[in-house]
Image (cartoon, rainbow, N blue to C red):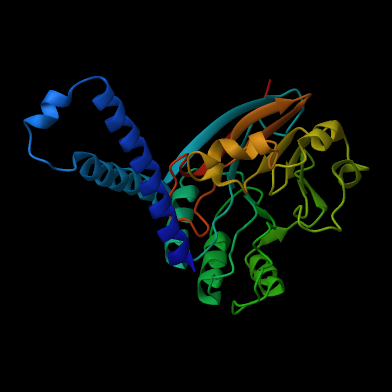
Length: 313
């Protein structure tokens, strides 16, 4: 199925560049350079150029997908976070078994360890329908080997529970493996850390039973810094109204490919596709994800993990 999807992507990109190439060729002919064509061999130069450009474009997209970059944000707060600076690592959309199998995920966690994070936050779609149990277990063990001040925290995404029931483990086995490796699973739940800040984890938007943003925040000390994890960036207005300080999401893959990367917001499918935004007193960040789903190319963005340096003013 993945091969079919990627074949379609290749063909669609070829068609797109071919249309552009034909338009350029037609425009050149209209500018009266027909003499050039009369004295040159009859070769279909447009077709050759289109094939070359498409190949280069998709090779570049393959590279952007299969290599992971480091993206950094520096944030400040008026609240006391219990230390001068809090270093947070965020990643999402690992979709274990696609560009990152268990072994490559483990290698990426070693890179993240060099950041010496205080806390690691996983914003959903950790696994996929095609993830093998072997890779799931190995990746969870890699998370368990991370050394941080406050541990790791996970919220589910729309793929984590599976759509087709064709993999060799269940969602409960996933959460058990995460917890066995000291990763805290948050499903509409809140954890106070070091008596200084909260991590709030929302169930995915696909779960009809999830609490609203204000409900999940009830009873919390508003003088403390609040980080909310929500896989899909689709509830900005309510989350800003709730008064949390920071909302972290994934899901969009940064738009994955041009022009999809600009359509999500234009159609209202997402409040944001990628990057930083502030509404009222709440800051929002969407990551493009550390890996991919079925499409093996990223041309509108690139794979990443995010470093957040949160400091007191």
